[in-house]
Image (tube, rainbow, N blue to C red):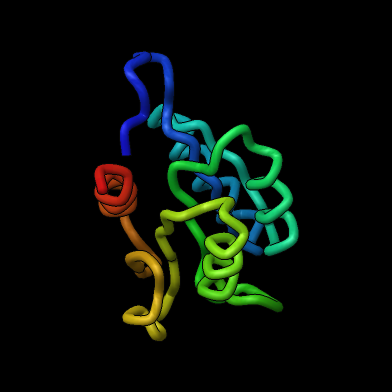
Amino acid sequence: MDFGSSTDERPVLLVVDDEPTILRAISRLLSTEGYVVHLAASETEAIAHAKRLDAPPHLVVIDLWMSPTNGAELAKSMMAKGIASRFLFMSASDGASSELPGPLVEKPFSAERFLGAISDQLAR
């Protein structure tokens, strides 16, 4: 995706995870890498946050196994509403990764592997 010609336009990421400690850790990592990071702890928060943005986020990073809705269902809902189109999933197990609308990074992952997966998705 083209992020525009302006050198100060940074990719916007929405991170969704129902574990507050994981949200904080990922936020710190991504912020130090220069991304604009928005956080959501539930499906409801994620959809509301995405709707408030001026444009869809460049990438939504979603925990696959959240409660009550899983990450795959959230992604499908966001796509149907036209508020997001590119996803990266995180999970401690690979689950049904072939059915996901985006790649899966298995936890635990290194910062380098996670950042590489984000870069790969943003380059698509």
